[in-house]
Image (cartoon, rainbow, N blue to C red; front, side, top):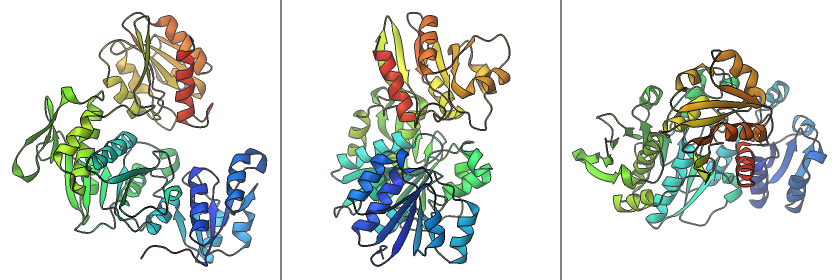
Length: 447
């Protein structure tokens, strides 16, 4: 049965996009919501106005009320790590703690598709939604892709949600059961929060934990961690990748559907508009998910042919004086940057930087000469990059993204590519990677 909050008192922690969506959903469905944030009211003016207009109680400057008052449920926003004393109090009161994702999944009674992994989630979610729409379904994207899922509920009958799921959202999500769940890949990521790869992998595996034999579990057959997670779950397993046992397979010059013992050309690679091998794998993952959901191959082909790059994912910006500019601001880890570099054949001036995660930048050294012609480092990453790369490489540093772009332009020649692929989070100088990418595009187009 779907979760019914009528008559219940719910505390929502965190006044960002997910928290606001959760609090308003509780209120819309007849519950009583208090939303609480550590920030002072002066930093939350637009959110407070929206919440008060919706009739939601608010608390700013701390979470005292969530400790002092009794609630039937606590809902955490993805970015929130609650203080240990709060967790202890909730535990002693036997108050359940859910993520916003868990809340939305328990409210929504229909079938949905969940997509997780270290890289490629947003592109894959867009592709799956397009495939479902080509088949005439009312497919709506939600989660990390943009709109909080709870902010889109309740939904019209027949709506199918395609949800981008992060490891943060899975920390307090134990009851999920998507009709189709997808694991794209698993690399070292967010270990500053999760600690170890084993913990990170266990969180990703939660998306599959409650599936039954009527559900589908789509895994990257080329990824050792994904193969490991694929063992022991009840959903029907579908593999994508380049391996011979993959149901959706990357061949030399085409994408293939190999289900049912026969191989059928899904699409020649020359007809797929997105750059790079990684996007070919994203396409196969999307095709596997959509086909498992019941979409026929012709609709999948139409969606693949019509695909366009998602903003901030190796997004073409413009060309000036024979120099191409690409925005890959979504790259917040080393694997994403290395993957972006693989998408280019010619010389690249790489703009790299931001707030580093706990991963080594040393692998960049092996990419100089081809494709990296020069590396421009900016933001908090400067000292770490300079300490981890060998002396003598063509590296320059800048304080911010504007200075980095100026240095990149000075170094670029006709035929080169200037690529913003930061490999770091944006939080040293921006609110999020979207703001970073838009500032970059604005700077490029301003001159």
